[in-house]
Amino acid sequence: MQSATEPQSKIVIRSEPASSVPASSYRLALFIGFAAAVWFTLLSGWLGMTPGTVIAARHNVLFSSDSALWVQRMIGDAHPAAHVVHPIETFLWRPLCRAFQHLLVLFLPLDYAGLLATRLLIAAIAGIGVGFMAFLALHNGIKTTQLVLLFIMYLLFTCNSTAALPEHFGISNGLLSIAFVFPIVATSPELTAIVLAALIVLCGGTTLSNIVFPAVSYFHYCLRSMRTKLYVATAATVAGLGTFLFLYIRTWTLSHYIAKYSNLRLLRHPLQAAVYVISTLVAPAVGPTPHVLRVPGWDMVSYEPALEPFHMSYYFGFQAIGAIAWAILLFTCIYKGLRDERTRVYMWLPLGWLLFNFILHNMWGDEFVLYSPHWSWALMGLVILGAHDLSRRFIAATFVPVVASQIVTLFAIKHALQTIVQ
Image (cartoon, rainbow, N blue to C red; front, side):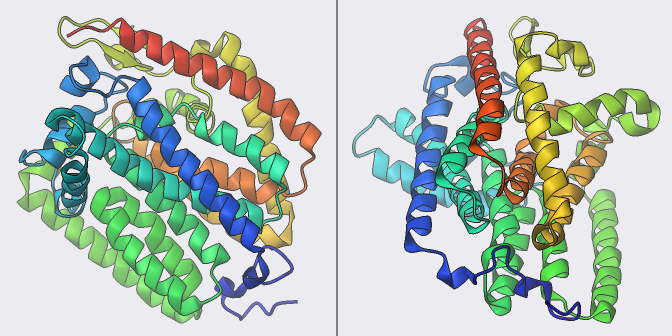
């Protein structure tokens, strides 16, 4: 038995050390990550992210996504409108996009090469995150058949329709996945600390609110004494609030950004916010059929058209079966993960991250599902942690309705996009 005073980073899920994980696990995880990158690239193209389409020409076409504006910033010289919220976006990701573009322009027209470059960058980072998640599943003893079924579900998540588009959501999804997995599978506390410190910069620099998860992970895994944790938590809270207030007062961008998208749903309409619990846990995996908001020149595919709140009645159809099946799988895995002392310690961070995002986006934000790539990996992480002893029969029984519903939803999104013209 491990002493409670030993650092938590020494705990491993399986009974054998991580170094004894067979080489085939690394190869399989690498293959799944590569397959995910290919899938995300194909998905963004299938949804119409090609030159001349409406989704590539303007923003707010699919779930309020700003992918067209993001492309203009990455391959053009457009200045980011929310540089305080995405501080390293053009500093780090723009050069990488342009590097891809310079390679692709040797074979493709300039406009297509630039757009494909942004899609490939998103797909690569999101795919790396999926590869890390697959390795965690293998590290947790999930067998190959169960692994394949679970990750087909994961790649067909409804929220991947926006995560695959050129914008920061796919990048954040990949980086946060790494921040979740790495401390669990790493055997070196020093390396864990270095990687998490780097991810604090990368996650927070890509989207400011996402600094929270790697920072809390660093606090959880890398600080050993309770006294040190107390000092660091106090200092980080004071510094964070001080920085936020300074930027809020001194920069027009942050104050405008907060005021523009503030919804305060949790305070003003708590019963309405309760419906979003379902949206937090289910909609990223199995979304209902979307609506099309008709505004001349600004038609948009949405789950909250004209700022109407998300309604449970949207699931009164075929996708309701898949949503229920996903909920059964998710809550079964949460129960098993919390019950098993080997995985319990790892369950609290993704659960806390779900709670954080539920509160945040019921206080601020417009289209709820747009932000869900920020926490969809946590849903899959909870499934991975609790699925190591689930039978193939049980997973297959949930797999069929979930995947069927996911496919129906993706085709519904595609069909809705095809009804929108410039």
